[in-house]
Amino acid sequence: MARRTKEAAANTREQLLDAAERVFRASGVSGSTLAQVAADAGVTRGALYWHFRDKADLYAAMCARATLPLETMFERAGATSHADPLATLRELALAALARLACDPRAQAVFDVMFHKSERTANVAPMAERERRERCDCLLHVERVLVQAVDRGQLPPDTDTALAARAMHAYIEGIMDQWVLDPAAFDLAAVAPALIDSMLAGLRAAPPRLRSPMPTGKKRPRATRVATRALPASHPRAQARAVAQRAKGRRGRA
Image (tube, rainbow, N blue to C red; front, top):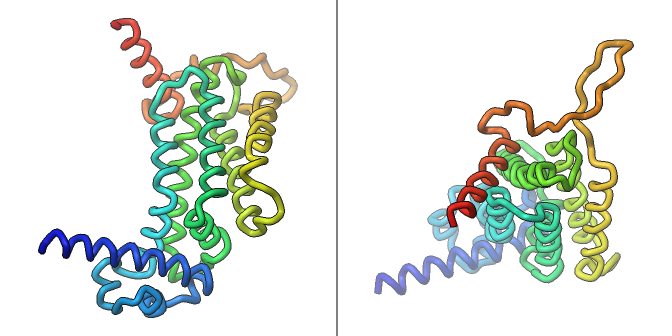
C-alpha cells in the first residue's frame, strides 16, 4: 500500500510538471496561475501545494527536469582531465543541440525559459536560479578551456572566462532562434557545422587577456598564464589539479 501511495504521488508530480509546461507555454509564466496548472493536470490545488511551495518552485522543477541531464554532463566534464579538451567541448555542444532538436519536452521548456518568462518582481526567484545555473555552466566550460590552454590547443594568454561566455552566448543564441522558428533550419543536421565554425573561430582568434601598460611602453610578448600563482578556487588552478591527479594515477599504474 505504501509503495502504491508513493508511486501515485510521483505520478501526480509528473502530471503537474507536464501541465506546467503546457500552461506556461500557452500563457506565459506571469500570466498563468497555479489554479490553472492544477486544473490542467486534473488535480486539486491542495495536491499541487503538497508538491510545490509556489510558482517559482514549480517553475524550477519544470526546468530542472528538462535541463538536469545536460547540467550533469557539463559538471562532469569540468571535473575531468581530457586528452582533447576542445573535442570534449564539441561533444558537449552537439549533445545540447541534439537534445533540443529531438526532445519535445526540452523544446517546450526552453521556449518557456527563452520567451515566456517575463522578468517581473514575482518571478525574481526564477531569474536568480537561472543566473546561478548560468554561472555554474560557465565555470564548467572554463575549466575545460583552461585544459585546452595547458595542452597547447589555445594560446597561453587566452581569456578563458571571456571565451566561455562567448561560447555560451553563441550556443544559447542558436537554441533561442531555433525554438522561436523551428522551420528556419534543421537544427540536428546543421549542428556539427555550426559548432565547428564556433571552434574554428576560437582556435584562430581567441579572446586574449589584457593588462594595462604604461604610456609609451610596448606590450611584451605573452608569457604562459599557467605560470602565475592562482588561488585554489580559480578554474585554471582547479583544472590543473585535476590533470596532475590523473597524471599521478597513470604513473602509479
